[in-house]
Every structure is written in C-alpha cells, then in structure tokens.
Length: 60
Image 1: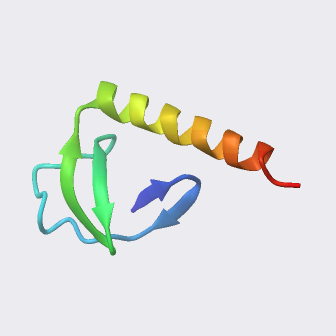
Image 2 (image 1 turned 120 degrees about the vertical axis):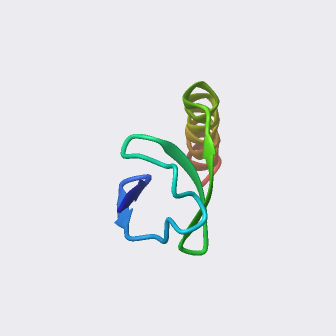
C-alpha cells in the first residue's frame, strides 16, 4: 500500500523486494520500479508542491 499524494493504492513490489515501509519509491502504472534517497524525494515533492501552487494561481 502506498500513499500517492493522499491517494492510497495497492501496488506491486516485485521489482523492488528490498523496499521497506517508509521508503520513497518511484511508482509507474501500479508497480514500484525503484527506491529514491529520502532527501531527493523530499526535494522532488517540494518542487511538485510549488508547481501545483503555481498552476492553481494561474487559473481564472
């Protein structure tokens, strides 16, 4: 079970059997395809948050 921006989904872990609860993962079409360093994941999530705010601010 993963949390994708507040949406919880069951995914396949077959490609990353080393992953443990709390790891950050790259997920594509229902499959975890890799683990990400926690610091890099936090930076990426922060950038996604900034983009979402910019997008919301540009709508009429």
